[in-house]
Structure formats: structure tokens, C-alpha cells
Image 1 (cartoon, rainbow, N blue to C red):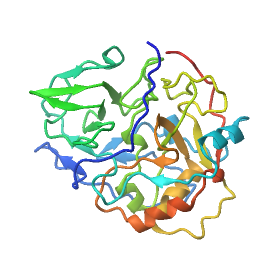
Image 2 (spheres, one colour):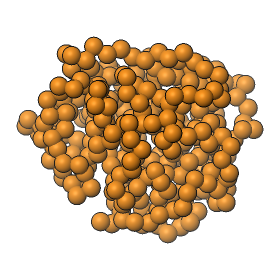
Image 3 (spheres, rainbow, N blue to C red):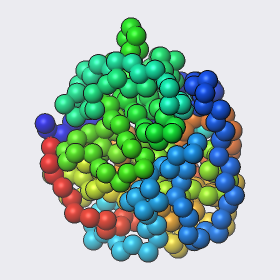
Length: 324
């Protein structure tokens, strides 16, 4: 299958309540892990008793000392060196990507795929019929994310809509959060790059705890026809080598001063020096994705708008692949 030119709109949420716990048996509580020193060894991010991928997963890798990509300067210029970061999430329920947590007995429902069924795990999925839809009622990506506890599996849909007793979606993906296995080569996911979405979101509980231990999802306006693992899918026909490939890791420069920043923005910026951003989709450049949550502090997050693209550099993280 040829790569799809999926150019996405800004991420939007659907509900003011950000995380719906729909399993009566779940009895789950938000994590509130204690903050640890900036370079302490960590077990890896967790949510609701499940790993957000293994600690040694590439998305949880400390890249603070990784070598620069030889094309770093051209990548940053093409994304926009004079553009600025933007938190595409906040207290407004129309921003952010919501997700739902379910227990092991959540009923499975049929999923009909309208676009990329050949690159999607077939249903049924344990997706509640009341699951929140990103940007419901608006045009957009309409992601649905479901974390199933105990099994620690992640079910994600793109362009999802309720249909009868199930769902219709453009594509879908199932991730075993205890595994480092990638999607099949050339396959998409609910995200254009073939990556999971939930493990790459800025999530309020971890920011409140003072530490993010994983890369964050970012969109850019244009990409080239290629991807770098752990991405498995391209979303452009452009051969321009100055454009970033899907899966490119972008690191906030060590020299960028953090002393002017405070609160939630400071926690995010520290993570960008250690774990960086990963190009996951086409959209507005330098837009960082986060989970919907009423506890975000908009004034804190607005500080990110003063961080220019020129403060970033691209790291070398593997060969550019072109399957699909």
C-alpha cells in the first residue's frame, strides 16, 4: 500500500471530564509517583498499573547525550526555526486527546474499518460505546484511545464513529504495552507514523508528580517520504531530504536556559532535554500533544509559546526507511 498523505487538523478533545473509567470492576486510581532527580535511573512510565511500554523501549530512551543527525539544521529549518512550541492541550475541553481506561471484562464490540483495514488488527475491540472521541462533532482526527488494565493492552482508533452496536474507523491498532514489538513494516496505526499515541502524550498525573520519562508526540507541517524506527509508516510522497521523516527525534538543546520557566511548562521542558519530541503526524508544526485534563494550568503551558524551533536539534536515531 502506498503511504497515505494524512494531513491532520489540530488535536481536539470531546469531554471536559478527561478520563472516563467505564469498568465497574476497575477500581483504579491515578498514579502519583514521587518526583526523582533529573537523571536518576527509572523503571519507566506507568499508568493504572500498566507500563507505558517497557523501560528500555526506544520511546522511553534518554537521548540527552545522543549524537546529532547530520541533517539537523535543515530539518529544523524546514519545520520552522522561528516558529514556537504550542501545547495542544489545556483546561479547555476542546483541546487534547482523551482516553478511557477499562477493566479485563469490558465487552468487545465490532470494528468496521473504512480506509486501512489491511493495516489494522481486526476487531472486536473492548471499546465502550460511550468512549470519548477526540474532536467529536468537528472535523479532525477523531481518535479513540482505550487502555485495558490487567492485560495492559492499548486499543487505538483513527477517524472513529459510533455505528450501531460497534464502531467504524479509518484505521486501528492494538499494542501490547509490555512488549517492544513494532508494527509490521510499512503499516500505519491510529497515528500516521505507525506509533502508539497514549504513551507519547503529556499526561497530567506525571507532570503533577514532577517528571516525564518518555518522548512526547509532536506534529509538523510537512514530512518526507520516509520513517525511522520505531515509526513504521510514511505519510508523504515528497523526496525532499530536508523535510523530517516520521519518527525523527528532536531534542531541546542543553544550552537552552530553563531558569525563566516554572510549573508544568518546566516539567515538560526538562523532559524535552532528556527524551525529546518524536515526529508522529502531519499537522501544525511544533504542536505537542497531551491528554485532556481539567487540571492543566493554562498560564503555565502558555510559557511554551516562547520556546522557538531554533532551540531544538535532531538526533541520529537510525536509518530512514521507505517501505509503503
